[in-house]
Length: 357
Image (cartoon, rainbow, N blue to C red; front, side):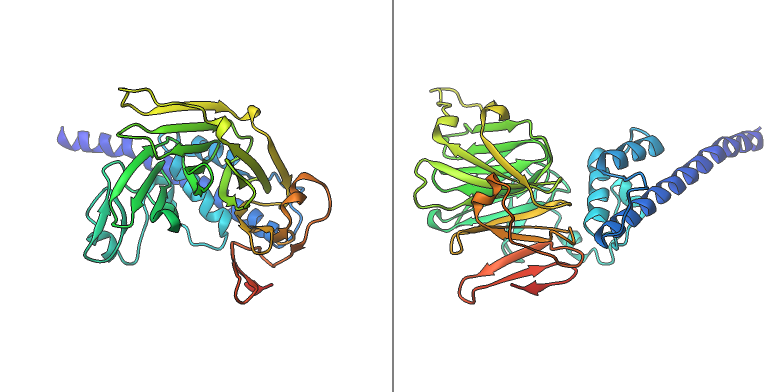
């Protein structure tokens, strides 16, 4: 009887193994096709005759192959990896949230599940709100106020003072892709995939005033502030999205009139309709706008993309509101990062091919 039961068990598990192998084969074909398309796009080769695979199609196909058990953020992480670097090595287990590392020495040392970041090997800053397996997306130093703003991917905004002590934090359910400090309004601004968050960190006690501007048409990937001396009680921010647009948004104190109620300790969250704000946007890239930055020394903004034709744009902020040609540079395989040195008067770009401007 036991032998028969063992045979039955094996016969039942065999189709499951076969189905899983078929699913892996389909997923591998999907990844190979996606990588091929991304590579062709970076080499400016035509893919018009093919059915282009964007994130939405990759997401739906992966769900169809493996079923609803696959987590959304694992699909997003996998797609982001091959989209930003088609030549990157991938393992099928990554779609299930499992990663193969050559050296796990560091991770074995960091036993705190609520780790934010390290000051040194001996001192750690932790916070109970930070979720397990979270990663830091942005670190912004605010010198004149002597603190640092930190945003994590899974929706935590935290402020640390110069002594490394946590002051307050706030959660959001969507992935945070970047954050900045608003010097005029004295608030923290963060962008997620479909929202803009303005956080009044100055709220007393445990009360957090948070304003969420939504919905946004495209997924926001980065944000920066525009420093202008004549802007009193208002801040301008630049944002880049996954369709190659750069947005300009003006935030004023009139937009955020939420007052604190005495004796009310819980957080106050107010959702604001994005249609009530004046967005100025212009499509500058044919791929993701991965970084935006305003250079007050040049009175210009810069934006970059992995797009090989419209790789790096450097021009006056007024160009976002008109159709005049912009100053742009083409770099093979695009630009992933850039910075400006005022002393040397040089802009350095980083990517598959780096250069100076």
